Length: 342
Image 1 (cartoon, rainbow, N blue to C red):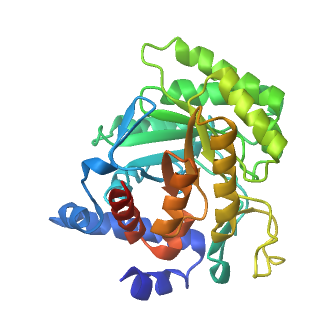
Image 2: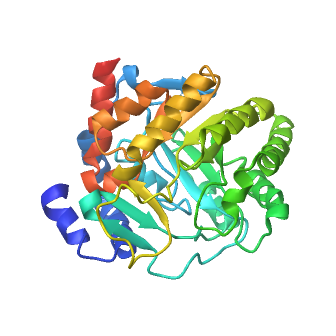
């Protein structure tokens, strides 16, 4: 149904409008009597072989929704009906911000890819907290992806991450520090060893003072060199954070068949980033001797893509762009394959 009916219609619309319409349609379908039961039958798999006990949390299955889809914590209960084992919300910043000018989201169908320059558009952390206080499915694992406001200078970035951490602490199950988006000016400079160590160390000190410390992960770019990845390994081991999410969007467009001159700046996701993302996962896993958790994301559009990332060293995986092209049935297909592979 998605491939032959929904997708062709949605691809006629502006990508950002199609995104919001998709959510409205999903929410409407779930609101009908028996709607959630039907979706559970269609998309969810309950199989103990899929469970993953990682970072002190029990994930019902290893397939998560990547950050960026639900920036404000508005849709996590709806998206859970598609069979996800966990949902990552954000990136959220302390203050609301509009993000970059539209258009800022683009499809490249021939490459099965997306380019975005959203710019951390979100309602701010206080609005997210209000929504999470009304959380009904408390057993659903939710990650909070946190960032800094565009107007905050890099030297004060740690303050923004701390504000988000403190505000969300009682409402999410794990945290992700996002310093790898290419769409906030200067943000990727925070991936450098000095500033990144300072941010993560400050968060971990605050985390240790809590009665029930939460796992903290770092989301990294696929564009890092091997020496930079070596620094990441050292930083993770020095600060003792739980692990890494590999990877965010790429600036490299060398593998594209589509022209992007009319699009301009933005991070590329989807099929073209698949190979590099898996390479980063494998490098981190092998070079660190599996010393920390890796969540794999980037170009997963089939069960085989997911298995490759798990075999490369990822403990969990996340999807977003691949779901746009393959449809919501992708989650079930991955879980079926993982169950058989165990």
